[in-house]
Length: 286
Image (cartoon, rainbow, N blue to C red; front, top):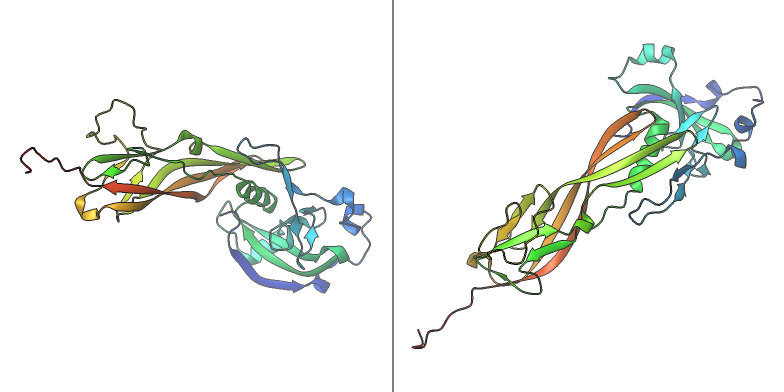
């Protein structure tokens, strides 16, 4: 996961941690000044219909805020800003399993430059990197499966004859998106690995890949070498909903690190007719 869902039950009132003096650094004393705003951006056109854009972070009161503030660190996605916890805290709490580390967070009302509370939290990926990972994944443009069958609809699939199932290459192949802040970029990569077909008659077919396209001249009685289904009389005749779901593995890299995130899916459906084998009537009516 991007951030390990472990939050210590250590909440310290802001008065116990606040600085008394005025910090001379402009971005500390006035973090909402335009020159202090650091937003996560998507770099350029991803080649898959996406485009450049900006994603703002939010502070503890839900207001749009910088993603990084020098004296507090990186926004952790929960309205708090995080820096590595001091060794004193680590000695008390114990070391988490690497690469996770403890971070100390300032939960800030940014407009009023006020720390509402502080907290300690474990992150498996540093908060700045995690922020970019989440944004890059959000910006991935995963296509819906482009369903193909043989016989080609609107022609009916025929019971007891194999139907070939595959996806058009326009909906297959690696997709990437990049999110960046000054000095740090993360690229997320989604790779299709399998297709789960629900053929509408109760059958489920899982294919490791997009499937092989049927080509003119191939024997209609020959099944697909890697992805197909045969309707039977027991499944009935009529119109069936065929659904294809692609599973995408998701990885990321940037800032000298890399990782794997939970898989994503994309789904599409099509209506398919199924018909029985035509009856051949002989000359004597039998």
